[in-house]
Structures are given as structure tokens and as C-alpha cells.
Image (cartoon, rainbow over all chains, first blue to last red; front, side, top):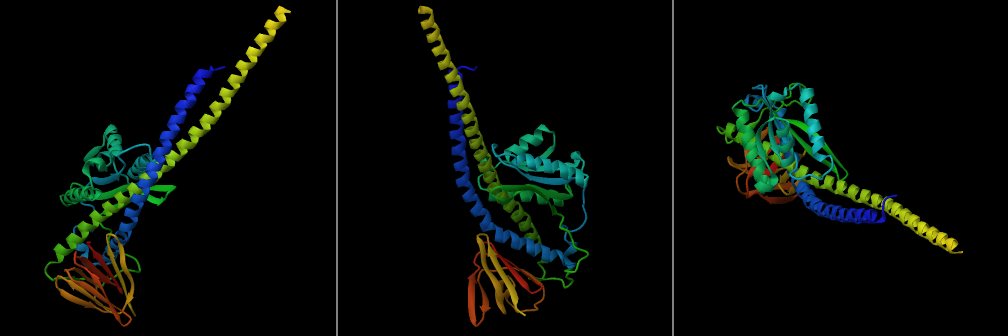
Length: 289
Length: 81
């Protein structure tokens, strides 16, 4: 039978833990609200931009742009949006799993994978596994996510233009609901030119002012990559807090369960001690008689 | 046939709906777009986007720039603000 004192100490320490996880859950909850509204605000813009690029991709005239067409180099750039902090359940692990799955399904050799990592957790993981990390940025050090996504998309685009990377994937967690976040991989460069399909639009585009077509399209495509990265960061932020909230909620509940269990064994131990004492007294009395 | 106009900025959707005429300030001048307009891309110039909603003409401020893409009966205007 474990002694009373040690059980009591355990209970009080778990109670402390429960308090901490409860507080963390509340903090995550309030951060989630903020991140969620930022994500929702930007969503309309990002989805409109997606539609615009889709419309342009239906058009054959622009296929001469370097962002369209075949892979130019053997290396694959992979953007991974992880988190700076842990204690958010399987949020990051899901990303890493998906990364390995993607490598396998796309047939990419791990030496050809060039990583652009946002978030400290992802950096630590891939560094430990000896991957080629080209860019690493943490959210806590670089301030606004808008600046970070601008910096990252500039680096990606210049590497893409120089042919250092031929394809670019982005792997991040998408926010489905508060209870559900899903790791998601998407190819963002080069743009897929649709060759078949009913929606194909052969009309061409009039780009104005005439004579500046390349500059205008270039800017639109560049901003698209930036917008894409930024919207994914916002989604990942919201997902991170939601995931942390759930993880902390579970931890709080588990702590409660353990406390109940320990309380039962504490009561049992106490009862045993009381019974022993009574037996002692009765034995003593019997001896006197 | 009406035009599907969608105007968004980084804070959300400004307008989404149908219109039969839309006037957009672009770097190449003010562009009037009616249904069946040629597919079209341009940067916005500071000014006001005007669109007809029934008999009423509404205006949206486009001081921060952005760009417009029109194709297949739809106009997407993405504002930078």
C-alpha cells in the first residue's frame, strides 16, 4: 500500500498541472478568436485571387510566362509552415508525416528536397533529420507574418527563376473547424496550364496598358504567391491555437481523471490505516483483559 | 446577361453581385465594362469604381490601387487596401 503522504503530494502536483493546462486552454481560446477573425477577413481576398489565377490558367495565350509550364530543375522546393511553440497536440507531427508521404508519392528523393521552413518546430525536426534547409524563419522573431511571407515569397520566386528549384509545394495545416485541422499539401509553382477541359478559354487577354503586359502579369503572379503564403500562415495560426486548445482541454480532463483515481486510492489507504489502528487498540485491550 | 462583379480587399468582400455596367479607373484610363467585354487585365489607378445597380450608380473607393481581371462574364477586382 503506497503511503498517504506520497499520494497526497501527487494529487496536489497534478492539481497544479491541471490549473496550468486550464489556463493555457483559455489563453489559446482567446488567441484563437483573434487569429480566426484575421483568417476570415483575408479569406475573401485569397479565394478571389485563386479564382483569378484559375481564370488566367484557362487561357492559352499566357503560357509563355515562366511561371507556367514544365519543371525546369531537378530540385523541389517545399514550404513547410509549422509552429514556433509545442503543446499543440499532433499539429506539427501531421505536417511531417504528410511531408514524407508527399516525397514518396511524388517520387522526390530526399536530397532533392529544398526546404523553406517557417516555425521553430519544423526547423528543429528537419535539421535533426539532416534535410537541406534553405530558408528558416520564426514567427516570434520576425514580427508581422505579412513581412515574413513577403520575405519568403521573394526568396522562393528568385530561386524558382534562377532554376534552383523546379517545383514548389506548400505543406501546411488548414483550418477545417475548431476540432479539426488537416495537413494539406499543394503545388503552387509552376502554375498548371490546363490543356483539356470544357472550361478552356481561348479568348486571350487584353492586358492594359499595352506594352507593359509582362510587368503587370509578373506583379500579379508574384503577389499571388505572396497572398498564398500569407493566407496559409493565417490559417496555420488559427489551426495552431485551435489544436492547442483541444490538446489542453484533453490534458485538463485527463488530469481530472488521474486526480479521481488517486483520491480513491488515497481514501483506501487512509481507511486501511484507520482499520489497522482500530485492530491495534482492540488487540491491546484484549491483552489487558 | 449581367456581369458578375466581385470586389474584395484584404479585409473582406466589399461587393459581390450582378451589375449591367461597371466603370473602373485603370492605369490606361477609365475602363467601362459591359457584358461580353473582351477578357481583360489591368492595374487600378487611384479613383472610384462605379457600378450600376438597377438605376442607381454605386461607388467604391479604390485609392490604394490593386488590379482587375475580367473574363467569361465575371469581373474580379482585388483592392490593395
